[in-house]
Image (cartoon, rainbow, N blue to C red; front, side, top):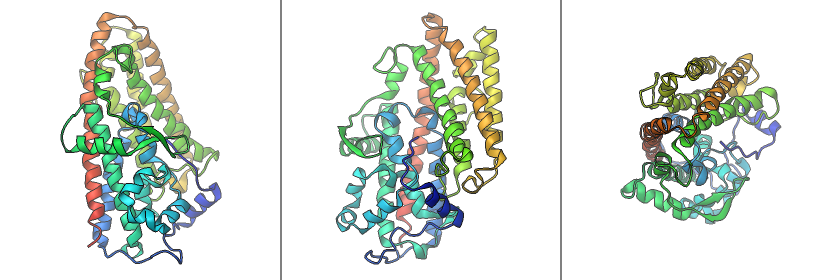
Length: 398
């Protein structure tokens, strides 16, 4: 996950504490004509945003691969929204006249889930339709379309699709977007299609030296988001180190985001979307049944710490945007630290199997199941619901 800070801490927190996120298009020189839309349709779009948002957070245990190489993570999930720059975009007639194309080259702090969230929500609730301007409507439609097409890239490059509507949209996205630099700005580096699923399942490959190497990536992908949720998403606001680092503040969706991030870790190591117990082709099942008492004990500890972390996050005082200093936030940080430590111990034991042909064969099964039943299924759900979000937003206007 990438955060780019555009607002000062004082401004960001002041806006949240006061419950005021003014319209980006309220300057005298901007067309402030209100969109002719339906409040019920806007509320339906907000509900669909939460569904699509959950799918994204359920993918964060595998932000390596396409999400990383194509800069889709920062492109679609950077916060906070650059409100000043967005006001400038809405004032720029040339950009707004061609917003569907121009949006592809905007700074990532204007796009994705949080760009949509900023337009649709205020203080955890759907906006009043009478406050949504025509310019904002046109902008959010373009952002939602761009978001949907980005999810098409994730789905098709992991499943290895080479035809169909979503493949065509993915290729259009890759041909019209470039990578991003560390500030979220578009570079001159182009993008090309790559089959990430095949590279993960068939090693040695361009990305992995062995089947075990790819299996270790499953753990490392999970550990990356565990560390980010505990150390950054919750930790930076709680410690006061960076109290503008609050994800999904407009919809008050932060704690749900955190919870879904850890669900993505459980899905990854249990081998299925929505799994509550490991299946027979999963990483945890292998660790529990590898005739290695140390590895079995470590896997059991991971299971225990996963459930504790989920329960502790679920018990945090909500909304996090207002209660990020509550003691329940520190309890969640501690639970996530313990989960990361348990994952680390299991990873180190697994590494001792390097070169073991029997383990290599089992890892090949684990990796194929992971790609097909976790990554591709998650991204398919993500793409389905991002498309529904785009259509729901378009339907706001009567």
